[in-house]
Image (cartoon, rainbow, N blue to C red; front, side, top):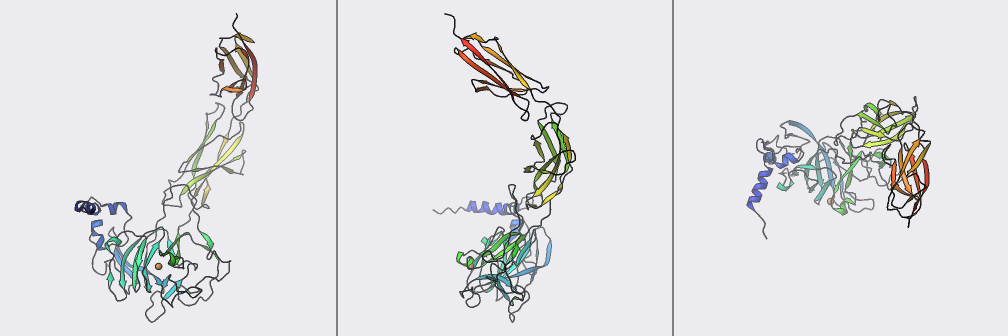
Length: 485
Ligand SMILES: [Cu+2]
């Protein structure tokens, strides 16, 4: 069935078109493209130049490009970073002499009379290094025979144009406008892409350390195995041979051919996404509040609260959580972790203290780098009031007992002794709990149901003031007798 509907197409084109005061869906939903070109006029309600020198196209001999941004700013002579693809028989091959396809660099400002390519193996040190938030424009020269779908990991690129070695400019196809993660790169022409990776938001509290590993994980440190030994700057042999060593890849990305047999045969290069590693700001104004407020006892919580910057998911330097630390004693300094708090919370309730004890608290912010701890907040000192647990409990029955006739509801009443603090009570019948601990002070009664059949019963009670002091218990036997008859 032909589902083509001219009205649907018109609606789609209208939705993409920006008009004054009414931006289209591309402008509102996508990061701004990097290089303004006339193909984007309708998407941005703009009039980008369509002629040299600001048309956003690179000529074959260009080493830089001038263009307008979507905000109207003119960028002049922005450098083109020279990259290379080489896949020709007899020009690039693996350790066994087999033909291979490789990514690499073009030596800047070389000409046809000089050796211009520095093809690189996957394990060679990174030559694609992108600082966080930076814009780069790559001019990828392909001296070979096959078209490769080149894929960029975890960020998108804007295809600017292709330019044949005959000088003809080929503008992006209509379906190549916007952001792409894979671009067709053909031989005997240069393909120009612009990129501006941003730190991906992490929707959970994650620690994201740098990727630090051997350049060649398959070989011992110090080995020369697997390296191209081609100097990426001069394209000549390495003066000092490259050896395997531990390398910091930052947040490690790659770009590679998306044809599996190519990518697995070394048509892949690492990309260092260089996210700055600053530590988050120190938390401030840490306060502690006892619940309930003294002189009321027993204390059930120490409520901590502090101030910190508002984290943004786009900035990995911001904190993703806090280490809440505590030590015991008036002058203690041996702080240890009490708990980690995540998700932007700036409060914590401590319930793990002893009565009559002094504690000191502090809070440290940490970010997604794992090692990015802030300095400590101010220290707050808290005196937990002392109180006494019960030293016993009385249990009485009404009727007094030791027996009552069947059909009587017998009320058992418990009272803790030896403490000024309200107690909690838990009742059991023949060892099976029939009423759990309730609120402090109430209820301290339990009624043996009138329907209880004749027999001898053991009623027991446990009492406590908190989870710290010992539980006190008492029990008594009570007999339910048959009716007279
Ligand atoms: Cu390929």
